[in-house]
Amino acid sequence: MAKANVKEQIVSTSLNLLHSKGFNATSVQDITDAAGVPKGSFYNHFTSKEALGLEVLQRYVEGAAQIAAILSDSTLPPLARIQQFYARMIAANTVNDYNFGCLMGNFSAELSNQIPAMRAAMQENYAASTALMADVIAQGQQDGNISNTLPAATLAGFVTDAWQGAVLRAKADHSIAPLERFAQVVLQHLLR
Image 1 (spheres, rainbow, N blue to C red):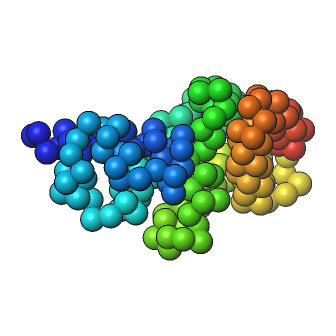
Image 2 (image 1 turned 135 degrees about the horizontal axis):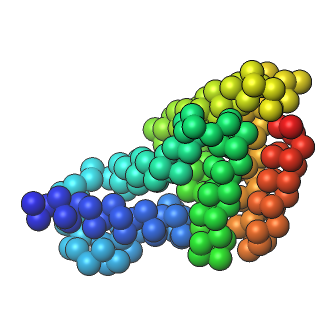
């Protein structure tokens, strides 16, 4: 049981450190110091920092999936689901004064050319989140509440890409303005 707790301590501490400081700027020593565990404990649970990074990414995606669960709530109209999803995402991004951004976006910029397994994991997660959004947009197009001038998959891809850009800009500016612009353009104009 103690070993599971050590591994959990390393993963949860790493999620915060890698998200706030970046992958390359965070050493294994930084992680073990912050987790309060001996450095040897790290290597008892992870073959490398890259292996830890993949687990941290998965943990982050699981957390984001909790927010994205609203997209599957069929008791709400599709457009309302999308609006509530992005309202929750905006709220999540205002934590820590916009310093963290999106871990997927951060890792995409920092690691996609360095760690092929990380790039593959991010591609898979982007594809899954885009497919979920495309499904909700298609439902909204069928009920007439979302524009059908473009295919749902095209709209979903653009919305996902635009969101990543807005989060990156919010991080750079330390401002909610890019996220509010995203919501205004996408939710009030593009999807209508």
